[in-house]
Image (cartoon, rainbow, N blue to C red; front, top):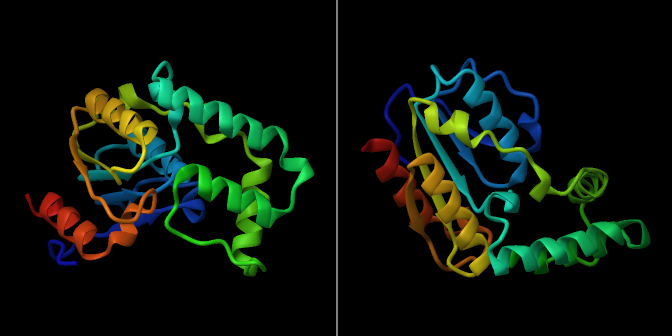
Length: 195
């Protein structure tokens, strides 16, 4: 992907759960865990030039939408039963509910099992307190992407884009795993970053 020379890109996830945002130009967020990075960016927006989010799990921003409310109810059921299931079952059910393009192996690799154990101990992502007002007031541009596969995620992305006055686009082909579309995702991100 061609990005302006000197631009530092951070793809946020669990590794950036604690982030100062002091050295960022561009934030590219894929999942609910990325919102911790956006919170840091909303608190220190000066070094950040842009924010891109792809189907965040922050379903709470669109409560009241029937598809979102159904997904929250199903997710609540999953989290209520998490102590009764294996990590593999949790991952498989979560991925199915989110329409992930990734298959779940019979035996989880160590990194995925560790992530699953952590996810099973966290509060549900739809309970996240997303700093939408602070992000809307921040000086950087925002792009919100979805995969066109789920009315719930479309509603969430539409709500976030409206609140942040963000650019909004749909990249079809890999369900919830929008960045896995590869060239389509990279081209859209490149166009946004170079605009």
